Every structure is written in structure tokens, then in C-alpha cells.
Length: 209
Image 1 (cartoon, one colour):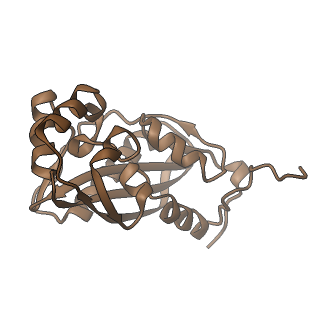
Image 2 (cartoon, rainbow, N blue to C red):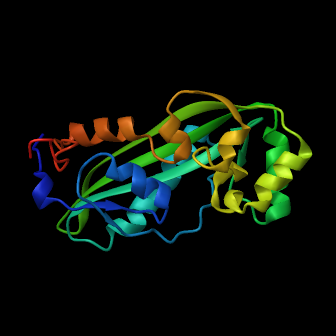
């Protein structure tokens, strides 16, 4: 399989999430942001991993059609409890209801990642994968949950919490990739890019640089 040079391939993040932008920057490869504007409707009768991969691919495809060449990264994170997917809350009451369900319990966070390689305006190859992390919430009071909702942080997050923010006060432990819970499994994405001959940390300055 041929290897495409980093400098002849744009790396495009199909997400408006500032968290994913920050995590992708850790890979040390130049990229641009071009958010996908799609309705995130989970497909029926699929395992959580397949749902996350499908949504990630749909986001990547929505952006890929805008380019003649480049590598598009799509990602989607879902929270699963009792076999049910918790999306982003519709309002503060919905956020509080989600947090009550997660309070003192274990759940799964699944992030799907899709890579689409675009050449001459068409997809010439692709990769999709999903990473699952188990998260345990400690038991907290109703007042704690309400105070967290009042911060506004839960409103744009699957499952109504963010592990990297005030939501950290809810988490007892995590088993698996922490960055996956934040929204992008950095290590797995690095491995996927390396399979296409794209080496991470190419643009990170060295101490003697």
C-alpha cells in the first residue's frame, strides 16, 4: 500500500468540538477544522460500537464531499447505560434525569472514529474503529447533581457530563482510555494514521530545535 506524505494530504477534523480539536493537536500533525452539520440519529438494532462507527463515518462523509483531496477524521461519542444510548440533553431537566441514571453506577462510553482518504474528489480508502471505556460514577447528592447542571457544562455533552471539567467531581474511576471519554481516543487514532504512513509528532519542536 502506498504511503501519502503528510505534506501533500490535508488532515481535516469534521467536528466543531473544542475538546476534539485540543486532543487532535496532541498528535503533532497540522490539521484544519471543518465541522459536519448532520442530524445525529443512531441507527436501530445495532451494537453501540457499530452505532458510534456509523455516526462517525456519516460525519466524515458529510465533510469529505467538500474536498478534492485530504484525509477526513470523523468521530462520535455515545454513552450507554442499561443498553440504552444517552445522547446530548435537550434541556436542563433532561440533563438532570440522565445524571440521576448514572449516579453511583457503571456505564460505557463508546467513541467511533472514521478516517476517509480523499483523492480526485472521491473516497479511495477508509478505516473505522470504535473504542469503549468503562466509567464508574460515585454516589453524590441530588444537590450536587443540580449544582453541576447549573454550571451549564452538561448541555453539549453525551450523557450530560464532561470528564475533563466539573464532571470530574462525579467520576470514581475509569477503566480504559481516558481521552476516549473526553471525545477522541488519541492512541487509537495515532495507530490508524500510522497504518497510512502518517507519523505523529512530526511538527513538535525539540529542545534543541
